[in-house]
Length: 446
Ligand SMILES: [Zn+2]
Image 1 (cartoon, protein in one colour):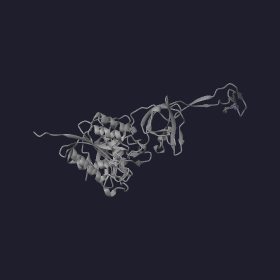
Image 2 (cartoon, helix red, strand yellow):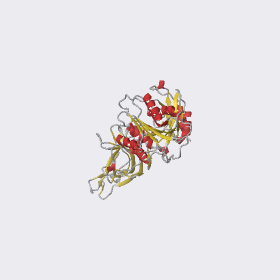
Image 3 (spheres, protein in one colour):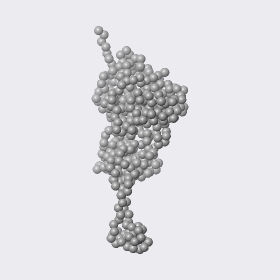
Image 4 (spheres, protein in one colour):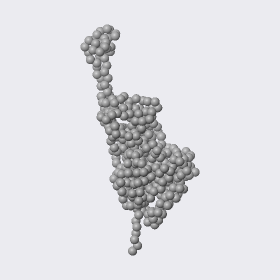
């Protein structure tokens, strides 16, 4: 009897894009085409977004993982095909392209690799840690440039998204002749699709600015992307969009987008470090201010210290929530730590939960008993005098008035245009998609 070797492979790739227009997800889409006749895919391509606060991140900071069985070509054959595809597409001449490719062979991704994957989303990992881990588990590694791509490639392999909230994105790509030209899509059809799909898709449109968000703006090959709760839904939604230029290919990705996967850990203020995604509970301890550039800033305190929290200008109406806070409000802030520069260390706010509202109180001088006009204080404990009729009140207290608050308790998130890929939109707030995936037809190529 012939011995059958079933090789389950997990292929992770990060940073195959360049500022000049290549995009890692397109490399993935072409790889799917090149591999499809030789392998059996076990999952959708996984598009994994990493800690968005990392300063040397790639555009969008994401990598992908393909999981498949390769019998005919074997492990080495697959790896060779992958590198050939990369060489034909990636921009290896650009100094900022630090591509990493890692391939793991085995049915189950080791726990240690899964933990590494989690850390690439919620924290910071080094190239060296990635290299050592890949070596420990006998993975094949290809690194270009400084090798930083290894972190994301391994991170993508480690995020298996099993029993873990996930979403889907249908990604359509443009024919090469159109790259760099304005994207042609029927705007009304996007609004119509959004209305029909309700909360089954998300972030199609930014309603504050009426901007269509499914089409990116750069010179890359992505035509449009639709995010939603399951593969059938994003496919159906894509079918409702009227395109006014050809679609070269499309692929459905399974992703951690829209899940808050990076915001997992609660920190005390004194524990925070630059670039970490954090959750901090505390009290508003300074009156929110609008600073130059239109950013809204306040100080948050807990028993270990205080820290600035900022909602930047692009977060639009979200800043109104921040400006409505008052000293004493109890809040939970979610965001990334921006290192001190010309300004102090700051939480760049991605969302906020208002847990308890302090009383907004104003104290006014008592009114004159004779003429009703507000009186003037004559000094501390000196009583009050009416400027109009000159009557005097020697023993009187200030009048305390409780004013209504402009905000309610609850969670607030910036508008879709200002959200990170990982940010859980408000429409998903009470929803977790942990159902196992079913494979439907998830790709099309020319
Ligand atoms: Zn008076």
